[in-house]
Image 1 (cartoon, one colour):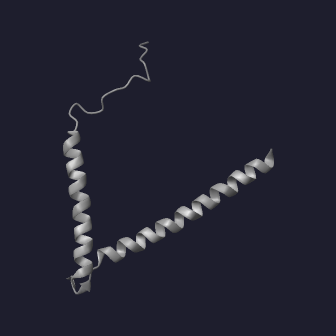
Image 2 (image 1 turned 90 degrees about the vertical axis):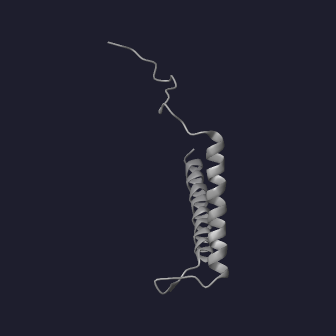
Image 3 (image 1 turned 90 degrees about the horizontal axis):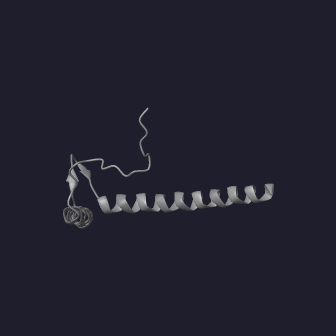
Length: 87
């Protein structure tokens, strides 16, 4: 039976993406998303007869994320408190 080291780092892919290209693409995507959000909020953009405002949608999703984050932190504290009561 052949033994191999399970903790030895293995390269998943032979070719990896350049770190500078990754940073550049990240900046391009973030700037593109911000510009599209700003453009749709400042202009009356309609697609198939529907008004589109990506900035408003992003704000609503962000508010929902904050809400669920606070709820999960509350549940974490409740579980920690129950765990401490057992001791």
